[in-house]
Figure 1 (cartoon, rainbow, N blue to C red):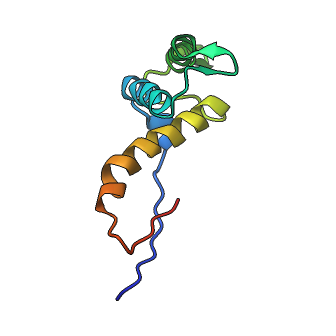
Figure 2 (tube, helix red, strand yellow; figure 1 turned 120 degrees about the horizontal axis):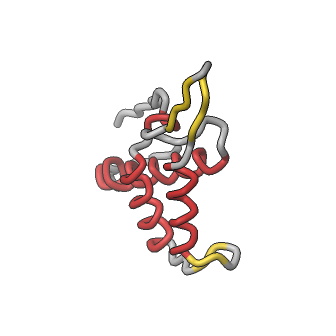
Length: 107
């Protein structure tokens, strides 16, 4: 028997999330966990708001106006939540199926 401990960090995860894929994963997460509403808000509205927050991020640097087309805004509570849901999907697909009967995985 062997024990393997490892740690990993995903550099720039928040600002590099693929927007459309992240929104699809958000929908999958909500449906898989049987959320029809979250605090009274239907999933359809949540997804519309998520799309708005993610895709309408803009900032100014000097005299130039920029729109963020990859990832989410740093420091946004929504981006943090979405990144965790994105990693849930990755773990579900890549890690959980590879775990043996006497192995433990945690994050």
